[in-house]
Length: 172
Picture 1: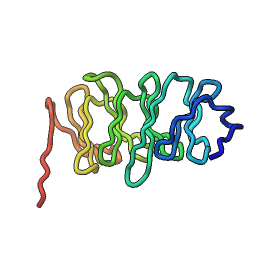
Picture 2 (picture 1 turned 90 degrees about the vertical axis):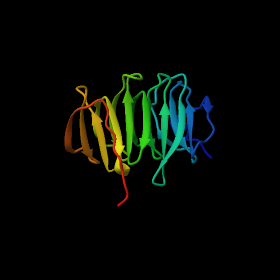
Picture 3 (picture 1 turned 180 degrees about the horizontal axis):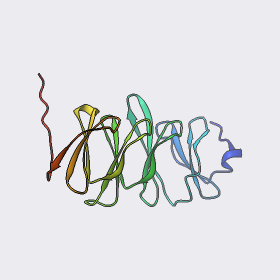
Picture 4 (picture 1 turned 45 degrees about the vertical axis):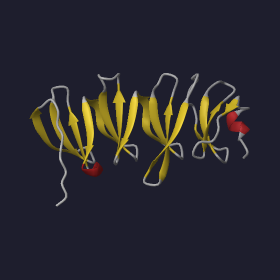
């Protein structure tokens, strides 16, 4: 592997490759992610003390979940495209969606992203769940009203005020 020192300078630290990518701490103490060919796929990660990098997979494609020293999480594609911005406390992969949480447990607000990087639901709901194998989303607002959305975020219907909602799926 050849590191592009024109882009990187002389790196201070190169972490081991995880899923074909590595986290690099540069001389200016900022971070970037490089692939196994030494090419920078995500730059300008800032001057943080620590980053965590974790590979995740969806439909045969590799993504990277990153966490900065301020515990903000985001997801990038293997080519460096930001899928979920680095502004969330927690991120969960559920079926066809990425459910992003802001705040602290138990006072999270929830938003939903597609694996293509589209924000499907703004991060303002008190709960969000993937239903029917990732074809629908159930979300509760701050007035305890539940909404059912399709996979694109279009509201299908809303329900009255309930503490919790669940569903049962049967084979027919």
